[in-house]
Image 1: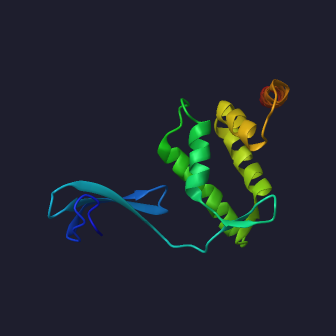
Image 2: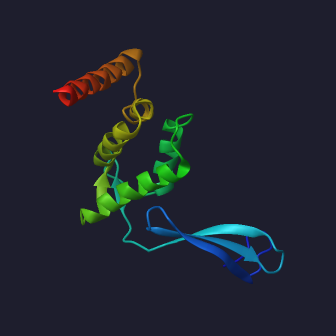
Image 3: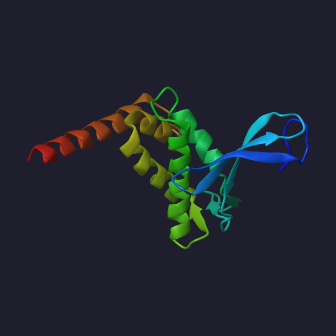
Length: 160
């Protein structure tokens, strides 16, 4: 592993630990040459996944793109970066476990929205507003009312 600071290939592992519920290993490394430390991640190489866009183009699944969208939706919410990494990993695993190597943007969006609603309602509204390309305040009001109605129904069911 090359040092990102001096490009030396002489590095050593200082610490290793399981990351993202055991799906990855986080390694703390130190460069023998410049003594600077850096972090690397190791995970199993998997079959590439593809996203089928609205116009039928196929694009390789980019977990960082999904992570950026979720990061924007969860800004100033009490959701850690590690929680988001795990969220994206779970989405990837769900797709891979379906034994399909491609998924439509519609199906991916629905999957993300369903899971995000369980985690944080504000982040859900933010994500949905971008995903569904809201153009007016009425769309926001409708989605908030829908969430509110679902929350009220769940509370009633729990009381019964």
